[in-house]
Every structure is written in C-alpha cells, then in structure tokens.
Length: 352
Ligand code: 5AD
Ligand code: FES
Image (tube, rainbow, N blue to C red; front, side, top):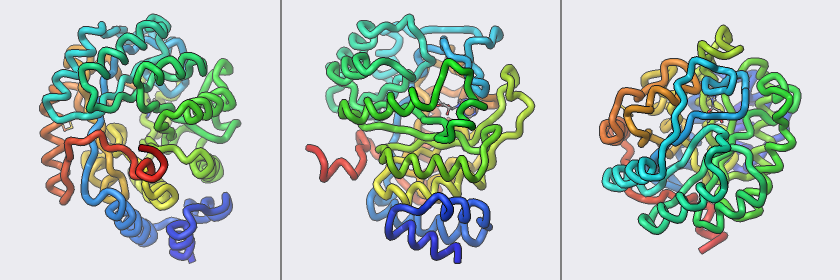
C-alpha cells in the first residue's frame, strides 16, 4: 500500500498532501529501505556514485535576526562575534582550491556591515581568481536589487532555506519581523534573476507536524529548487529552544529519500547537522539519496564561533583534515569525491 505511493512518487514526481502525510505517518523500517533503494537508483542514474563538494566559508556570525532556534541569533550575548576580511576570505578560497574544491559557499548571518558594494567586490575578486569555480551566496534576505547586483557580479547560486512552508509553524520559529511571505518572495526573485537556488528546512523543529512537513514537500514540488538542504533541528543551549528535543536521523533520511524521488536531479547535501546527531549520519544520508557534502573552509580560529546548534562536528579540524576525512568516508561506502563544480544535471537541458 505505502510501497505503491513510493512507486507513484518515483514515476510522477509528485503526490498530494494527503499522500505525503500517509507516507510520513505510516513509515516503518521496511518502507524506508524500499524508499532508499529507489532513491539510490535514481541518484545513480543522474550522478553515478560521484560526490560533489562545497567549501563552506562562514565569514560572519553577526546577525540582525532573532530566530528562536539559532545559536547566533542577535539576542545571544554569549557569542563571540567575528567578521572575516576580504583577504581572509580569499585565503580560504586559495586553500580550498588547492584541496580540490570547485564551489565556494559564502555563508553568514544577516550582517549589514557587508553592504552591496563590499559583497560585489568580494564576488568579482573570487570569480576573477577562480573562473572555473562556482560561487554560492548564503547571506539571507536582501532586496531584489541586491540579489541582481550580486548575480551580475558573478554569483552563480544562492542558498536560502524556506525553514517551514506552514505559516503557523513559521510564526512558532521566528519573531514577527520575519514572515514566510517575505521568504518566498526572496526565493521567487532569486529564481527569476537566474540563480541556481537552494532551499530547505529543519527536520524535527519544535511544532513541526506531518502536515507541516507535507507542506514543505508541496512547496519544493512547486519551487523546483536546484538544491535542497535538510538536516535535523538540534537545540542550542543559549536559545529559547534549548530544552526542545532534537530531530531524528530516521525521519531526516526518510525525507531525503522522498525528495530524491520528487526532484530526481536535485543536489542533496548530507548536512553537518545529520553528521552531528549521528556519527554515521552523512554516510546514511548518501545511502538515502544525497550526493553533496559541504565541508568547512573557515579559518580554524573562528570555527567554534559559528555555532548554530550544540556539539557541531569538525570545529577543531583544519580544512585539509575534513577534506581527507570525507574522501575516506565516501570511499568506505563505495562513493568517490570528484573535483568538479557539481552543477545540477537538470541544467544540462535548460541552459548552456
Ligand atoms: N539546528 C539545526 N539547524 C539549524 N539551522 C539554524 N539553527 C539550527 C539548529 N538549531 C539551520 C537553518 C538555517 C541553516 C543555515 O542552518 O535551517 O537556514
Ligand atoms: Fe571534518 Fe571528518 S569531515 S573531520
């Protein structure tokens, strides 16, 4: 019965809200294994057993927002705040390039210190030094004009998780200054401008229900992003959600499998968060349909200051250590890290 819904998702790439809810409510280990096998199959059709790397550069932990789940929220006085200079960011890229990274992700809190002129300048410099690399921004909500200026300067991709597609759940996770509507508007603008767009959500966030997860899946079905980042919610001790339970590996993997069948060519990261709650989490994610890993390229001195949640892995490791660690881990499960920008196979038909 549930197996047929999985077959249907694989064939039609879409289900109804009720069907997603039924799958989520009735899942068991046997159904999950059935799903993961199909998801691996689809993933292999599109990407073989290649793993794409993204080098994450966490360049500022200042943030003007106050999301209840996030460790670097404005109200958290216990964070030691930092900003990387352009020279420091370029040094991260240089090291990353030598380690075989061909995508750099500039990620940060929503930090007004970096105005459009500064961001444009950094983008131009990185793209002129590394023309064979893709550049991804993950710096939150900005105006359409800013997004356009960054794209014109050479940024290729933008990551902005929608966090939850259920407006009531969105209110439970964010102060009133942030709205789901504004979030969706940003994502629409980014797509329109021509970015390869990444969205996503946390699994097991406080107040999440099978119904709200079904809304997330329907939203992804409609948005058709190039990448979908999902990972378990993990409490941070200095946030209003400090006493909330963390999300599970099991549900995260199930959702990864569903998303692979819904969007066969999607780029699906095995996130740091799943590697944090389960030592074999990233490997399990790959075996459930994921095909991307995003190791940290941030300078070692700032690693332990970019803590969105507790117990984050790799905060004591050099970029080279993570790079080689990932290579070994992927080899052990029969996959290989490749030196490639790792564009979505869905782009092959639609653009040059
Ligand atoms: N647990 C897990 N993921 C989190 N994020 C923020 N805080 C947490 C947390 N406590 C995720 C959000 C954000 C991304 C950068 O990290 O989904 O979009
Ligand atoms: Fe960082 Fe394994 S990925 S040490």
